[in-house]
Image (cartoon, rainbow over all chains, first blue to last red; front, side, top):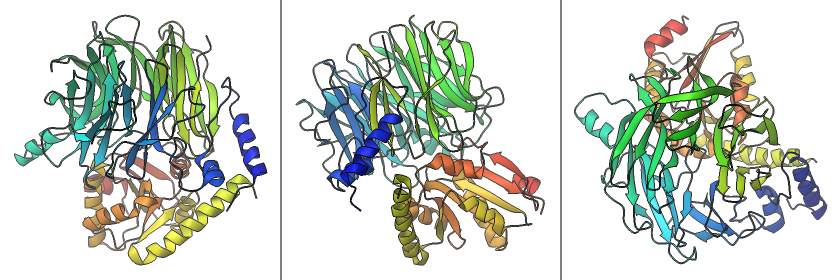
Length: 411
Length: 160
């Protein structure tokens, strides 16, 4: 069914009208409108599955997404106004996962190496592999993807996170079931899965052997990563305590395979043998060892989206608040820019999904009232916040609005 | 025609087509915004159980295993099984259900990308965690349970 130009214009106007809280122009358009105008076989950030984004050192925006069993990368030199023709990363099709908790990740080093990771599903029995590819020619072409989990087992290796430290160390963390398999083989119980990681110190040319961070993680939530000094990272993940409680743990990982500061970061008392599919968000605070965390729980102590500032030195969360306890609220994303904390999450009011934001200018001690950035009454991805030295940006994909990349900071 | 109705018309015709094709292949039906209300009407005055699962949920398999055995022992057991995956994954879901002998009973899969609304239509108080089960009394007041449903728990929450 072709769409007339007038209808298309009306759609664009309707789209703009939906964005009262966002300043400046928004160039996104729905995949449906794009297909109506330009044909059904669109490979575009606006049609792609579960996009994620990063700025390189020169301020170019890189977006990765999945389309028809391929990961694609597209570049924008005008902060999301226009995008380059997407470049295919994996030449051979593979079942690259894309959903709220699983998406292709992308980082770009100072020397311009474009690196990606994703999870490829290998069966419907929760098995998958952690895949990695990179481009050393500025994103024109990509090396054949490699499997990063080094156990050679057909088991669960999923929910990857990719992180590049300021010093150029490339960290990959994921949820791994190799220890579960070994334990079950001995007829012993193994709650959940494990967290593993590896590091590359040569921009993804090679990775060190896989290292276990922790046994008994939850099986189905994304892992949050934030820098710890120049070379290390801190990670936050959903961990199983006392066999049945799924709260959060934090640990510091080093490039030589040392795990330290492992402790319980949230005590929500969520007693559940289930898949929340609801991972946390974390950014580094102003002081070394201080982390801003936002997470979801339906625990006996905390139910809803929460925020707290965790200090590794004291092993304790401070200024814990309930951000949104409405059922349907979820998937928070945090960012810190010039002393202002940004927290964005999805709500649901029974009819529509409002995208909510609140800010704190005092390290999470007090917060602004939530404001609605956008609303949709169709399907949408988790919102992500992307930072650059220039500002904080919303990265959000929805059926109605397409892929929105929009600055939120107004300083 | 408004944009939404245009969209729904197209989506609806696609889904009806998928449904027609699927009738021979499996017992999976579309779960849309109205489906839960319709299901409740079908069970008017009668108690029933709802089990929600997804192909990506490992604990759900434990529950499906128990429910499959229950259904085999008592084919008339009032059980509604709904997958929260997109119905585009129906082959995968059908494969899994077959493994638990649940392929012979009608089941449902989410058939609308606005999953938040579908979840809300089942229970506004549900956060989306899986497995999730509901126990409806004859007057359709209900109790909810999150996490693996064991046979013992089922007997406790569903004394019918």
